[in-house]
Length: 292
Image (cartoon, rainbow, N blue to C red; front, side):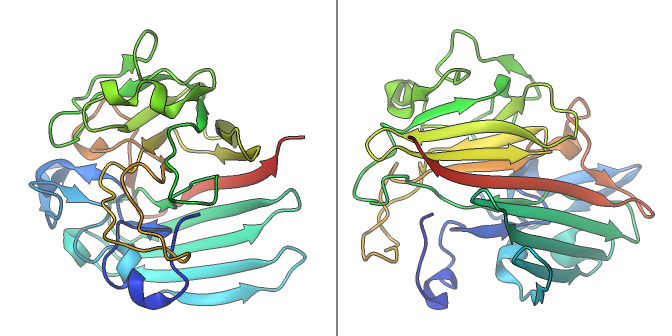
């Protein structure tokens, strides 16, 4: 993972290195959405759009941390996002549990409840470079995604509402493919939501990232219907990681499990509505191994 070795740099608003994202990960067009007949207006912090929870998203608040004393090393983070925070309705009680698995995985379990209808879409925004050296790009990494479709976007990276087949396009990663082999044919690089195949709410392996030189492998497992593949298009060397290396363009990538961007404004997308009496529950595992 790409990040820092002290708290200070994270407070400079870096590009969400390792962040817990909410209330809504990714983008909401024009920072507006409706529940029933009522429209809500959110902070716009990405051009005209709302991104990753707004000006003070979940990555910028203080969580209550507590270790969980059982057979698996775990840490619980909890937070009450109050009604009206960043424009969202409802008091949202959130708990996120990080735990290590016996097979070298990091399990992230998300839960939330609300006292008013609201929208929720939580994710983890870790960046990866499996060479371990951000002087090298991620172009030679091999990526495989269990996704037959993706959601095309407009100039503001808001989905158009269409779900387009990946077959015959630079977005086809159904078999392991070098990221750099077709990236230059995608304007701006990859920053797209992939529609996961056979997503049914059960935990499934949805992505495999391999670095040929070291043999390191990252598997992503999730219960979510989508995953955002971001190829580090906005990294510009402004931030220096824990090794003292500036993090430059395309030297790290994200695989963010999620519901789809702008779902509250796209009725054809899976719903992100959470109602009182219901519980938001999702799970993602990032598992590291080395090829034998």
